[in-house]
Image 1 (tube, one colour):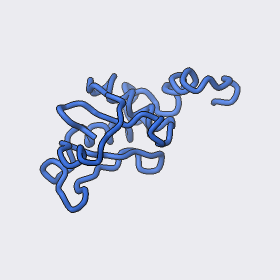
Image 2: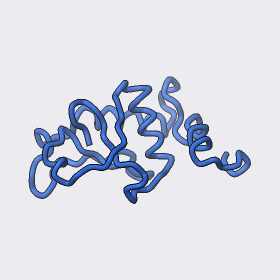
Image 3: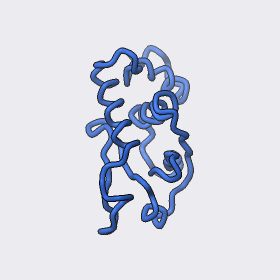
Image 4: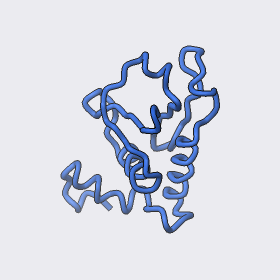
Length: 123
């Protein structure tokens, strides 16, 4: 969710999937878009006042949400942060832009440190 120009995402303790895609998107927000990312619980009522909402996953990358409970999110169109983040993620995933870190490669060091996996288990 985006409010006040900041991306707000639930912490992993709120029963969400802790994954490389999520870590990659947080990293891209912070390093490539210079957007602050705040990890905290989100109340359902906050969704109605959000400027943008998007979800993420390996298959979809960034999936914009333009309506919640038949109420428009923001102005009812895909927002600029979701658009830019989706484009960056797609480029990083496909390695079309060598200036953008590769998802699942350069960002694996972040995943290794967070998950404390043995390097031999990661490519």
